[in-house]
Image (cartoon, rainbow, N blue to C red; front, side):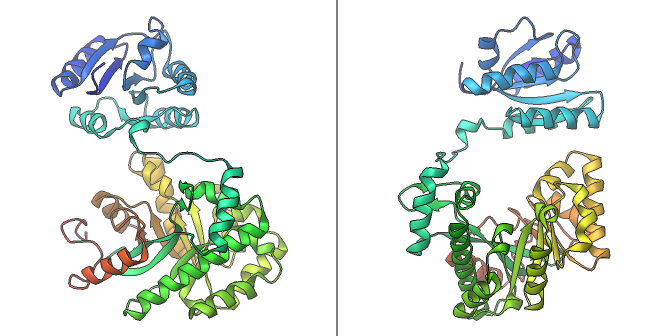
Length: 409
């Protein structure tokens, strides 16, 4: 198979199958079409890069095809799927969620009838997972000693993702994030680093304090250059149970020359469900000490919003996955808007994560969202690169060049 993308159009409607097949072939793809899936062998399926899949076919529906692809993905490379249907948004959203949970790569979704250009954009924009440069996966047991060494020798890497005001797009602080790299091992996903640290509370606390130290140094650096904005730091909920945790946090910041008012600690939304009296007491004391508290990834588990009143938070960050879904689904857009409006009514700052396009920004600017964070503004950057970005933005008064950001509307 030539490595120009090979596409299988799998739909029981012959007219659509033929029209789409011709259009995709004219666009330079290798194309085959089929009206049913039962005659296709596993070898047939894995010979394609993308399967354009109708989720409702009489012989074997899209879910049956997804089950086959999920099994194939366990053995080796399997095609991605582009889901199409005339059964409505709800069915597409549900089947897409099933596919992702079955570890099948979802290229995109389209409701029938769809525009050919929308189909072409999805096909051209997709890359197979093997081409995305994924870092080698290490086990927790391999990571833990290397992480402990990096923390002890102060060689841990931290990067900063800036936060911008949703209207003016001026610098409004930055979030400190693990850089995703450990000495000796090399690239490691930040999620795996945290997972390894979480198996040892002492290591998790040491990691947290080291991130706080590096984050504070970053905030002090941009403050000394005249930039105003707090640093946000992810605080694992488990460390709230460490004796004298507030004293340790305050001492680390004091040594770095930073005041509590310049720091926002971010808690995962799951903290809502684990908030014991002791943990709530620590959170209350953090607020009394002058720290900001942000609830991160809001929107993953909407039932938790009922518990917002129990936490002394100052900010909510709407989960980036919810924004990604809002690009496709009307229900997700309504949920996103409801969270933003609830945050405003509760007197909280509202941050939208995962803002990637001018269209995202236009959507967000119609809602009571105070700050945006995401690739439209910047990826996470080493501190020197962040400071250079701030200097470059001085002349235009915004982090994002005018030709990149959408106009105010």
